[in-house]
Image (cartoon, rainbow, N blue to C red; front, top):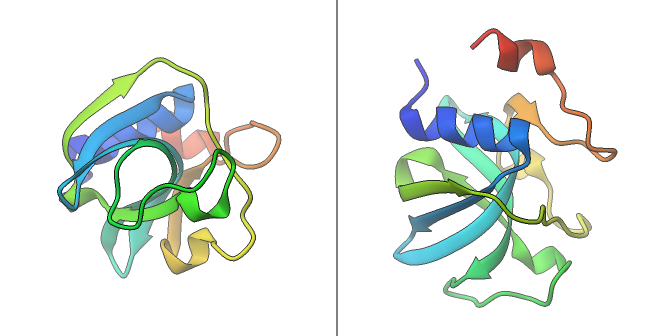
Amino acid sequence: MATENYRLIRQAIHNRTQVIATYGGHPREFCPHVLGLKQGVEHVFGYQFGGTSESGLGPPGSVENWLCMSIAGLSDLVLVTGSWHSGAHQGKSRENCIDEVDVYVPVGWSLMPLASLEAA
């Protein structure tokens, strides 16, 4: 059974909603792009556009701003309305973060697989 944070991130992907949360002691503002499991553990692959991180953020659109987070490590999660952010994928991929995809935002903005989202 999915956790509440997992369900909220699923909703954020479906609605193209920004997420604000704390992860690794840092406030993060990100747009989730892929949600699923890594070795049975809930994870999200997203594009961070605001907040802080240990290594700092790259410029807007930078590949450096992709991040992989375990859902269990997220706290104070809130969905907010705002512009959708993404960036170049070269060098970073969701395959290192998630091996069992639930929902994702592919290029072109259509949500796949929508049926799994509607069934929840």
